Length: 178
Image 1 (cartoon, rainbow, N blue to C red):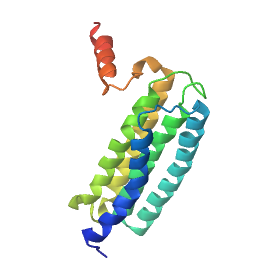
Image 2 (cartoon, one colour; image 1 turned 90 degrees about the vertical axis):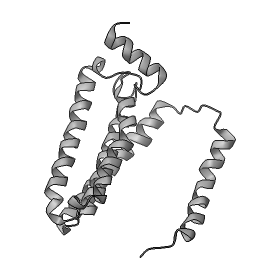
Image 3 (cartoon, rainbow, N blue to C red; image 1 turned 180 degrees about the horizontal axis):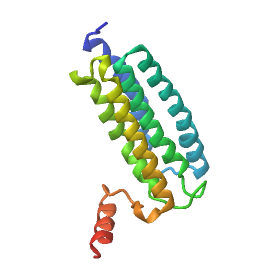
């Protein structure tokens, strides 16, 4: 059932009031919760979310619902990245590392790209489910491999986000010796 945009906009605006108001009121202050809060709030809850999203993906595959498989897979990959992000919180299970930045930065792009597949006609039929599941398995394997490599050999993962100005400079210096 489609709703006119005019009836949805007031709901979206109302939902945005609290976060926008908080940013206006307190956005100039840096808040750093203790590392254990980040570890449990992000890591442990993301592990639970990963399990739930995988269950949704499996249910969609059993019903032959390609879009459910795609959306469930996108959420499971995002939740898996966030699980790694939280579990590699420095000084909880591991020391300082670059995985926390890489997994945090990759979460939305990876999920968005996978979920965008649901808009493509080639992924509209139930015959596409095996291809979608194969792509999701490949991406999940990539997450596992990058995470394990980053834990075993932390120097391979930059500690700063390469997208930030200081991260770009340090990445360039480390790669080009300047």
